[in-house]
Length: 145
Image 1 (spheres, rainbow, N blue to C red):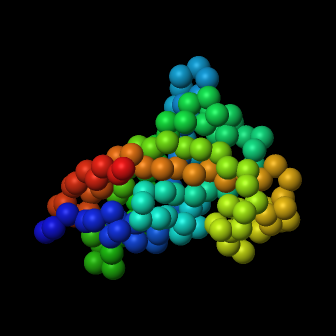
Image 2 (cartoon, rainbow, N blue to C red):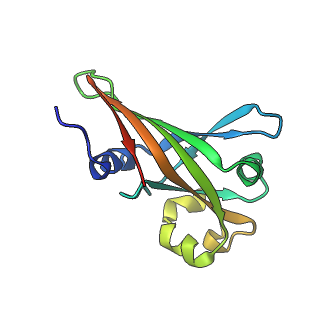
């Protein structure tokens, strides 16, 4: 079977709502928490997450921008495991309302009642440097520019 392209992989990742975001704490410990990407995954290797600015994850990213994401797709109707994806990337914290508008979906109002005007709202952009995936018998690494 041919390896997935970044475009193919992005399409599969878009169907997985929740992933785990791992950051490094000030004491060196790794901290991991669930995040929703709201299907906002781009072909260039970018994933986007909304958060409040005053959180441990934003503080950790401000200290060390290297992060990882892990995703797993749902099993198939026949019980075959879904795709597994591990991403090593660089995170940045964005405070631009213009960028918020580009990535906002109404489902986010569940957590951010005032929409893009929610006080303390930030956008976390994770740009993948390396993506490894396992899909059935296939295991490949994609280097992202």
